[in-house]
Length: 260
Length: 287
Image 1 (cartoon, rainbow over the protein chains, first blue to last red):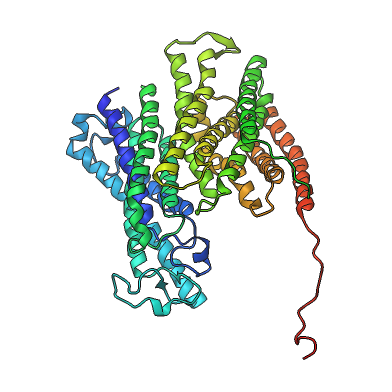
Image 2: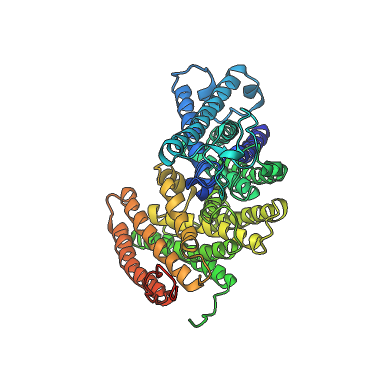
């Protein structure tokens, strides 16, 4: 087994896990209070949010991978490199065609995850506005940093805001971008190590869960986005997710090494 | 209600590790020795013992409040357990492939393969220790039981994976896990339904009058329900030899009824009598 392959697998999993962990900090996680329109954000916990956006990201990344491998999208050399496990060797990874194929798979992952995030933000907003009759407002900032709209006058007394205002939607898109890219990178790293498609997908889901839960411990369950004061805690999650993903990457590299 | 002494979590860890491993090994060795698949239900019993261990560790950690809801910790445990379990089983296969420990023990099972589950458990414990260290010292969660508890739930998750893999597919080598459990898609229910009996009991029972016996009874009840589900899934792996899956499903259903009644009994013991006082009077007396 080429040592470069093992190093690249560990590095890709560490970077992917890190992206997921930081991405969670951008997602407006409201938890149960948000489901009752008593806090800003999406009304469920980090685990479920990470799972939904991660799964859709993986499905779209997997779909594009299948299209490339079956030859519908033409990137010559990629299918063979995945099949014989040489994708992460020096001459393949510097080949522009292979790099383009990797880039398009990562972009597909990003599109899937961002799509899920924006659905999760905007569809509940329609329900909040027309069903519950609450305005979208954040309690953490006085003015929306992006639109400049006044927030505090619209926050109902006794609540911490309601709905997902513009700044939180934009923040969730950044979160989806990082999460989708991270998930796709982990999936590619495991797939390149000649694990089966299902094993690569579920290994990626496992690593996704570890990083999203560690990140959500860092924000103690809820956050509004990059404008929330809790966002300043990201350096801790940076170290935590990097170390955790690195260890998981070593396990994955071990499986690849023993499989050779 | 009289105070019942709690079972120490190291005792439960011992029961989970030793009992769980014995059940998993016994299931595979007995089946191989007799050439049948009747004993796959023992894998589920191993998983239930591991579930008890994990559910108690979850309750010891989450008692302090982790801020994200109890289910997250079960997903974390199964996320970190999966790769560690795969690596441990791969290690067993590697020993056989390299002709180390390749002597045949019984019914065609090589000694190297038997190292797999043990290696998986050790890897998972190491993984849990690292994640526990991160949560405690880098994320500064200030939960005194975090470090040991995280190690324990990760080990429990690994044993639950192994136990239910034996129930579904009747073996614990890497190839069986990948071909019969992961590539068939059964890993998706294993991920969620396997984790549920570990994370659900404390999530359902938490509160000031939470007690260990009631929580763990609910854990057994939920784990038996999972056993029935995995018994049904194993029909797909043993289409021509359905006696093993039938035994698993029937035993699971019968035991589930008893566990359900036992949990109902515990709930009634913890209940209190409510006296109806009527609605508040519209006007205070004497005004």
